[in-house]
Image (tube, rainbow, N blue to C red):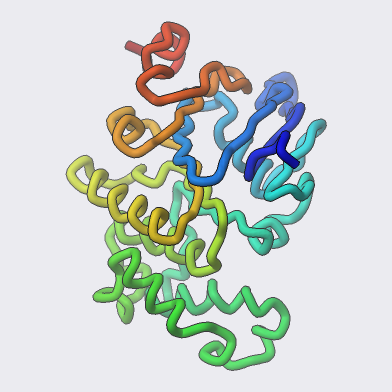
Length: 248
């Protein structure tokens, strides 16, 4: 298994009509990396993470996670294998409290048994409270999720993934919709939480300053392919990336 990373793809391909969204992608992510993904709209970033998390099936190629072929498995099965995900638009239960959102997420660990138990008996309450504290949400635990400002909704979305103790967390634009003044504070909380839990991460991001500060590695996508991959400062100096991604 030394030929593979924690998450690996080989020959991963998918087209929508005449648009190639993933063009024979070979990729390896290693434990402990903070990978930022950048690219213009339509470059293939979201298609790639949707394939890796089971929301799309490739037309060709393979996805392996932690040494296991997960190609075409359902999002639920992939989550149970240890890949968490947060979304550009936070997927929270707006009519439930913040703590109840984490309880509902945590109850899925019990699988079918959890649906036959009272919610409080189907979870590890200490794990829920520890995760709330980790994402600095304890003070909002009994507030409705729908009442949270966007930044805290983003944190709650991540908390609902982290309460399942993933090995890898994939975040789709974690700072989108968050004010410029709040972005760095949000990312600092997220990265401390990931470090505390020793979770490897991928995050799609458009803010280059965020990428420079928080990523250890950067992949730039152009037309369904990874055009550059390496240390952020190096990738951001690539003339092809400057022309086609950054636009400067």
